[in-house]
Length: 149
Image (tube, rainbow, N blue to C red):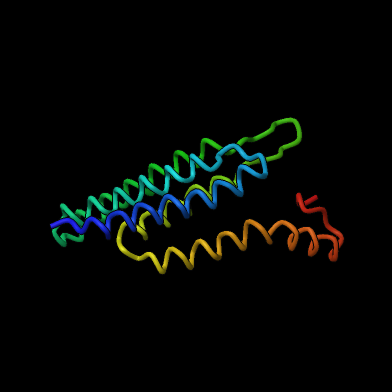
């Protein structure tokens, strides 16, 4: 029997947590924004929910579905990475990583690990919000530009 409230909680948390990551990316004018991250997290949560409902405890079935999600998300994340030949600059790595993390958070929510997902979203937002200024500060202290030159 399907737990309706548990399903709503899992899918709602996944969508909300994915939206938070995407909102940060959108505010920084990055290619994958709030809707993309919310949908990635929601879709991953749904995949995890489906596994838990139909695999009946078969770890091999669950493993195959989760491997497929992780692989698919890798391709989606690769789509936001841009390489500029003129100056050998690469952009979009943080957005690609955030898409991947959104999927993992969604899987966690779908498997009922909402507390774990809440911890991960907390750390993710800390990295996204504080990471840039901390990186800039450290680079200034050691006399290096944040872009590595």
